[in-house]
Length: 110
Image (cartoon, rainbow, N blue to C red; front, side, top):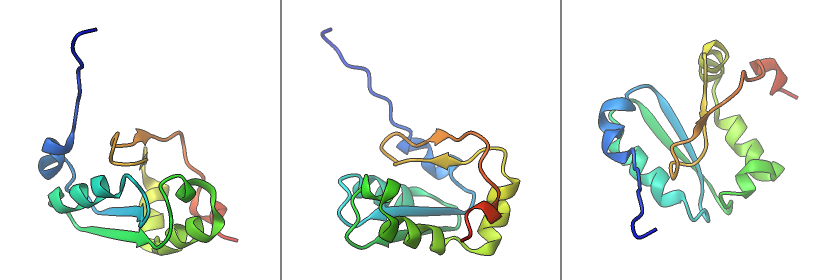
């Protein structure tokens, strides 16, 4: 193949990402630059929460990092998540994927 097709949705962020947004990125994540860019470009209410010491992959399943991200979500945000038809998870490198039905808020509490 002598050419490569690349798609980036970053040019659409100012128009499309106007809903409240919480971005979570690890301070050591190679992908953090994309979260920084998405945060900068979004026109909606937004927050970039950086988990100190975490890599991108560590945010998947290392409890000390995952717990920080989960605890950052407020009761109001959990209510919006519980009411959502779909949630976008993932790194801004691929703009996430729509999740399957997610567990209700009470399933996240210990």
